[in-house]
Image (tube, rainbow, N blue to C red; front, side, top):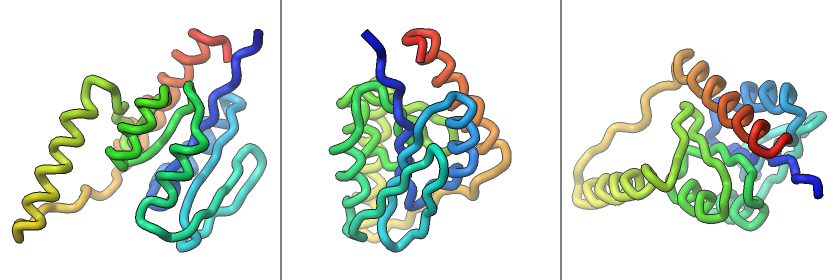
Length: 156
């Protein structure tokens, strides 16, 4: 029985590490699926499929959830999407190299909820920090480590 190679599925609207993902995927001979709204232009290339969906609030997330399979690798900074993807058996990374797991996703979802409550009551919150070279390096290292580990487990 052959094991399906995982697909790297990218929440592409605001992903700052698309180039790094493509490079890593090529080195592991894995397919990439970039999903974005029509508001963002992405071009397909060898090994990289692109799907564009309506610009609705959760259109990209819903497409990803409906098409990911157990063992796929999802790259997103959306905690809600990460939570659902984990429930479907995906490995999930942020573009900064943080791996979302069953051990940390509840805390992250709770923190997101508290920040939303604060904003609704007139409080201010800071946006994400600018992406740094160190963030990109950390992402590349973590993605490579996760894929090597999966390769060893399943001989992908």
